[in-house]
Image (cartoon, rainbow, N blue to C red; front, side):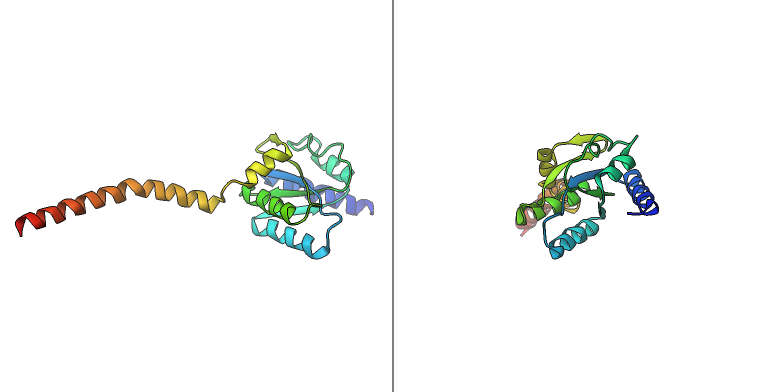
Length: 164
């Protein structure tokens, strides 16, 4: 790898670290190309980005950032998934890929500056998606209004029966 390529990779990782609200450490080595493309596409669809580069470049790019602890002293093949908006959705993509292929591992992560273990990332992945949570919240807000409307309608029907 040429020096300019290394500098470009470090720059790309730094930019993504600055924009992301969460990162997840995983690996894609040892799986078929089609599976790796599927995982990367899933991360992209969840408004994230996945990068694979040398561990030393990850370490240099993370120096002085919230991800310094996670990305230092890495051993073995590593990939980093950045979550720009919906962290549980990106974690869910990696978690589901791990269910399909044991070679894809969740090694840990950082969410809003807090270090996460592999178990905590798995728990995050099991959360409902943002859209599901918003739907539940909307249904919760609508429940009292709906109940009130049903009561008013029942009162109206009762009065109509009494007058008839």
